[in-house]
Length: 480
Ligand code: SF4
Image (cartoon, rainbow, N blue to C red; front, side, top):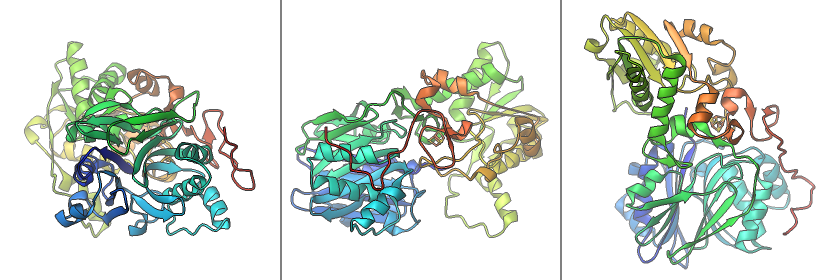
């Protein structure tokens, strides 16, 4: 499972934004490793550097030197919409009659084709097949007729899907979060400026202070001189659709998202997992690194209940097995887990073990993990998962798997337990997720665990009263 992207936008009083943007992208690297880019504006012209690869490889000191200007935006990308090549790397930057635009997008539109077709008929030429370019062209067109705020509103009324955007129009940096707030976006204050970013960990990296989350449907415009910002609630929706997986898996544990520290949320989910399906065993082990906070909460709740269960690190991770590792045969691919994880025999041998992970997608890794622990001498292996079974794909920008690849797509929990060869298996309930996040299920996106989505997606069910905007042949939205 991969998050699609991380975005950032910065406006400073009197120093170049390139380095703070670069450090922010480092802080957001976990959200995308395919490409990295920065676009700045020096008051006269735009400067852009976008490269495939990790942040550390994409920029050299000369590149940062050439990115002049105290305002800019940045992006790290893992592709889900559009091709896996340099033309879809971001920020997307382009000059129109209405001025220069740079866009960084996290999320996925479900009606980009309809808008793209309409704009192509009106003469817009596209250089990529990504949805971000569609937003850029639509916004550029609206900017010919409207001021910035109205132009953004018009575009928001036409696009349907999930989006957290940082945008640069000439030297003005702005941030927009979709009306359901599916993907995160927050605003922070620096000593000499302001920052908009996917996760607060990036603000911490810059020694700044988190101010708050950008509200769903809100536009935040940073002052060009870095001294403040203005906000506009452009679209109001009765319910939000926050992606619960941000809290469970994608976001850094040290980030605060929608007012909750991710680490504490994961520990609480672990506590709930014990309450709902705790099993007595000698030792509880996290699957590193993602299961760690869940396992510590689970073990703590067990001990509070008088259990003798011990919390231990039983699996060591090889941090140097990267994404580029080449595994030539299927057999070797199946052994990949042994390259990544090695058991610490003394914590496992002769013991009943519970391993805690955040999710099961295809089930291959879980099966290999159970085998690994049994080979290391575990007498019993119980598996506990800090999220409900994933039964359906994500259309909102998470690279997950297709329906028939998902182990829970058409199998019961008992069948999955048999397939991964665990002694027992339990998942956390949807109710426990909503309770921990202190929100109602109606304000969460639960598409991948219920099969009902908060957006109007062709061929899929929705869990709310929502219609995608009708684009083709319709008059453009009226001003108000
Ligand atoms: S479908 Fe799942 S992963 Fe995708 S946005 Fe919704 S909750 Fe998040």
